[in-house]
Structures are given as C-alpha cells and as structure tokens.
Image (cartoon, rainbow, N blue to C red):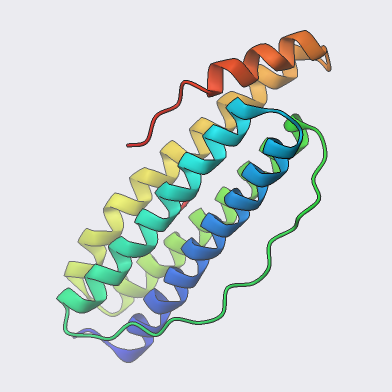
Length: 164
Ligand code: FEO
C-alpha cells in the first residue's frame, strides 16, 4: 500500500530537490558575477538536473494516484567563497540529499512498497554520480592550488558541460 507517510515523505523530497535547484542557481549567479562562465554553466546545468529530479517525483506521485503538495522553497545563500569552497559545499549538500534518499528507501522497505523501492533505485544510483562529479571537481581544484591561471583553466573545462 502507498501509505500517507510515504506520500508525504516524497512530497518533502520534491521540496528538497527544488531547494537543491535553487541553491545551484544561486551559485551560478555568484559565479556569473565573478566572471567564471564555465563554473556558472556547470551550476546552471545542475539546476536543470535538480528540477528534473523534482519532476520525476512529481510524476511518480501522480502515477500512483497521489497528489503533489508544493511548499515554500527556502532562500539559498547568496554569498560564497572561492571555487574550491563552493564545490566542497556542493559535495556536502549532495551527501545530505543521499542521506534523505536513503531514508526514503528505508521507509519504502519498511512499508513493503515495491514500486517506490524500484523508483528510488534510480535516485540511489544518481546520488553516486552526483557525489562522484563534485569530488572530481574538488580534486582538480585542489591541484590548481590557488593559482589563478589553473583555476581559469578548470573554469574553461566546465564550460563544456552540456545538459543531459
Ligand atoms: Fe537531486 Fe543533486 O540530487
């Protein structure tokens, strides 16, 4: 059975995904203001991906005959530090999202809701990818060691990221 508590938890996850989108869009705006077009591009694509995650849950609730209840999205931070610190913030945020997805999965297991378990598998794999991507950029930025030229090169690399 698709229990009320599981439906509410998925509604809550929609809000978390939309907050993630908003957070990355705020980071994109910050990078844009710093003339880091590549980092901003990466964040804008991340924003689109997070919106896509929210919409997957949105569609899933409707597919199961449930309803979507949208809540207020919290204001994200607007001031940030250097690129390395920002990507560390991304990784920390993604770890929190992973934790939230894992808790949803535990609930779906407890309630023996097999379709939700199946849907969540996609998100579990996606979180591995999300953490891997952030970690890889952190490692590259650590190698750049505050050298402006090297950081500009990483920025240029990230301008190549495409949606999808
Ligand atoms: Fe929707 Fe970045 O996890």
